[in-house]
Structures are given as C-alpha cells and as structure tokens.
Image 1 (tube, rainbow, N blue to C red):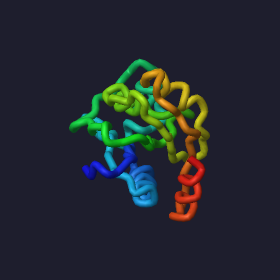
Image 2: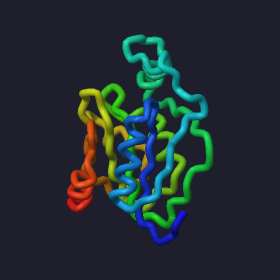
Image 3: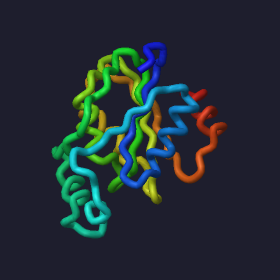
Image 4: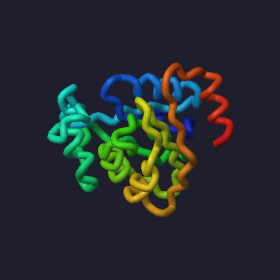
Length: 161
C-alpha cells in the first residue's frame, strides 16, 4: 500500500453492489481499497432474510456472533480515516463488520460508514458498531449510497467530512 495515502475504504459485499460503490468511493477519495471477505462465502440461501433459519438471520439474531474473516487484516498505521462499507441487514451493519473493527488497531482513527440498502436506513448501525471500537475513535455521519453513485456526488460528500 502507498504510505502517502491517508484513507482506506474497507468494505463487505455479497452481491457486488457495495463493492461497486466502494470502488467508486476509493477512486473519488484517492484511497486504498480492502475487501472484508468471510471465511465461508455467503450463498443466496444464506442471505434469505425471510427464512429465520438462514445463516444471515441466525447471525443477526445473535449480536455477539462474529463471522470469521479470511485473509490478513490491513495495517491501519498509515491511515487517518477508515471508510467502512456494507449492505444494511436488519437496519444495521452485518456482524462481520464488528469482526473487522475488533481485529483492527483503531485508536485515534476517524471512521466514516457508508452503506447500500434495498430500502432500510442506518437504524442503530453506528451504536452497534461503536461497541467494537476504542473510545478514541471519531465517528463521522454515514451515508447511504444507493443506485448510480456519481463521482460528483461522492466528491461533494467527501468535501463535507
């Protein structure tokens, strides 16, 4: 990674929607990119929110569950800001985001969440993620980035941070 960069965009995506937005955000912010990948990839059946026995339903009903991540966790020393992206599940971030945050050294970092959603808002997302971070983390207001996200929209949002 380029040590001159000051921001990292880390994201979790099952269907590719959040991946596309994360790539566009990384380009607009001139940031590095990191994909949070589950040790066991999610299948369409795992993601069936209408099935109370689906993997995602079981995980989201147990807020202490931390799905394992595959691969090395990035060294965050060179970064001041971490953009963290995910799809909204049950009005919050999937618990794999907690897994990632708890594995990182986040002291003194600024975290900016962004999400994609089929219709849900952020709900209690930040409150549920803050429990996985040290008190020294500064949280900025997150943004839902649905549909076609233009470079201008991203640059305008970034200018407000």
